[in-house]
Image (tube, rainbow, N blue to C red; front, side):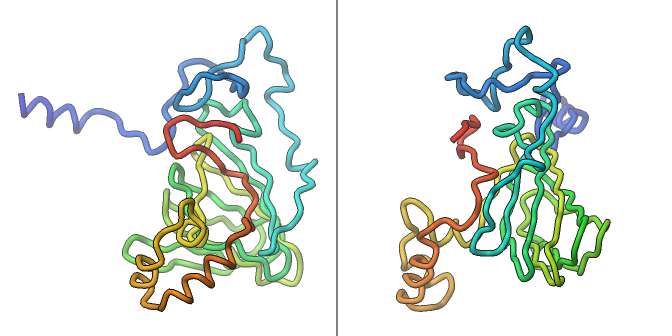
Length: 229
C-alpha cells in the first residue's frame, strides 16, 4: 500500500495555480450568496458578448496614490469572464519617481511587460538573493509565485506596464502594510525585536501607514472563497 501511495504521488499531475475549467466559460455571478473557491457561474442564458470584453484600462480614472502610481485590474472581481480560466491582467502607471513597494502575489506567478518609460524591477528569493535590472520598453520580467518584488520608475516620464498572472485572483500583500498596518496590530514587541529597533520607531512606522496608500485592486478574503468588497 505504501508503494502504491508513493507511486501515485509521482504520477499525479501538479498544478501551480488555479484548477482547469470544466466548461467553456463560467462568467462569475458576483451577486451570489454562495461561498466557493471562486465564484458560481452566471446563468448561461443571460451571458452576452459584452461579458467577454473589458475596457477598464481605457476608462480608468483612478487617482495616483502617495507613492505616485495607480493600477487598473482585470481580475475576476472586475472582469467576471476570467472566472475559472486562471488568468488576470493588470495595467500599472507610475509617475516619475513612483514606486510599487515590496509586495507578493501569494497565488500566482507574474509576467511584467514594460510598454513605456524606464523602470527598475526586481524580486528577492527565499534565500534573500535580489535579482533586479533596469527595464526599457518591450522588456519582460518573470516573477515566481509568492516572491517579494518591486517596481521603481527611474525614467523622466510616466511608465506604463502590463502584468499577467496565472490566476483569476492572484491577491496582493504589501510588506509594509502587512507588518505595520494589520488589523489587529502586530504587538510592538514582536516588531521591535525583529527589526532590532525600539518601540517608538515601530509606533512611528505604524502611524505613517494608518491611512491606506495602495489601490484595492487585488483584494479578496484570506479564506478559500473570493468575495467582492
